[in-house]
Length: 130
Image 1 (cartoon, rainbow, N blue to C red):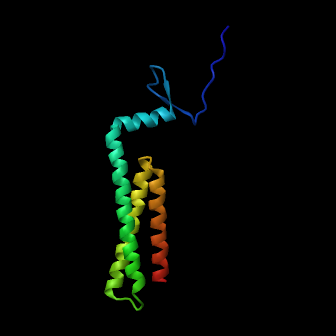
Image 2: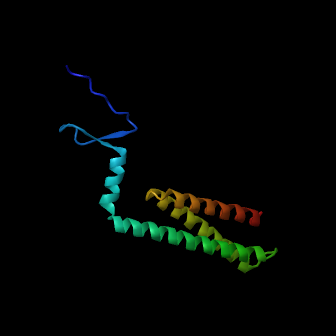
Image 3: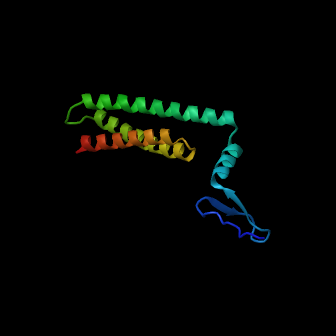
């Protein structure tokens, strides 16, 4: 006989389609894959991932060199020290933006690294300014 239809859990599926023409359910995993496939070919996605990690590494190297420059300088601060602080603050916000972009593209490990580096920069700046 007829068996009752099992309804999927709401967090696993999303309803799409028109209200009139019936609705079609697409699993979340399938939606993610379709979004990536529609936006990038496999080669483009690999290149994007490579470029994002490369720019993240370059940004981290810049931050590290700025740290070393600032650590070597002593108080009272000069115009050069304030310039370095401004650059560090700019790098920190750039790393936060990189983290957000990486997370949006599904590169969560890179996003986490960039966010952690940005937090370290912010904490360091707080101790320098205090």
